Image (cartoon, rainbow, N blue to C red; front, top):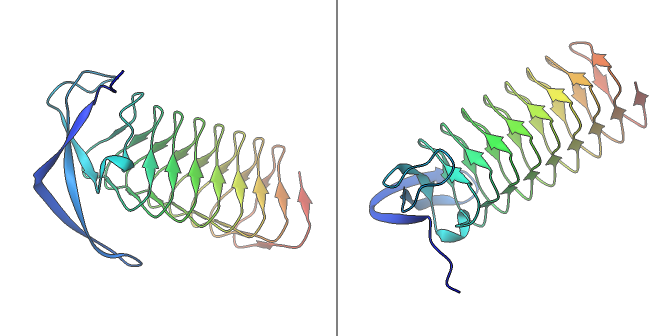
Length: 201
């Protein structure tokens, strides 16, 4: 049985987008061909480089001026909004949401009910999942994991093999890296650096 396509690429709506690591990419607006989720037939969406970037299954959609290119994939019921950028081999799926100017790069994965918003970025091999939120100008990279109901915001930076989970909060201008685990209901103070094998709870 042939797959029903939920959108088409508008080849006359070309947009050149400069990505630091990839150079200048040709991206194209999408237009809905069927009703699904809150999307109606004829709705104009954001930009993709090819149909490989957005699945025709589920309610996944790219809104506004958001961009998904290279080998990045958005699928399931995931949503990308605003001026967010999903690039490289990144994947956004399940019920995840990327909005405002969120950046997801490298081999990063955002899934479950996770949210990335503001100017926050997730890159390299990092994973953000379950109900975690990455907000403000926070960044998560390396092999770091943020999950559970954890929240990273402000200018906080999570990297290395660090894990932040349960109801932990990392805010402001704080660095967490190496093999540090932050969990429970802990709230880390501002302008501090946590590294090594600390278990903070």
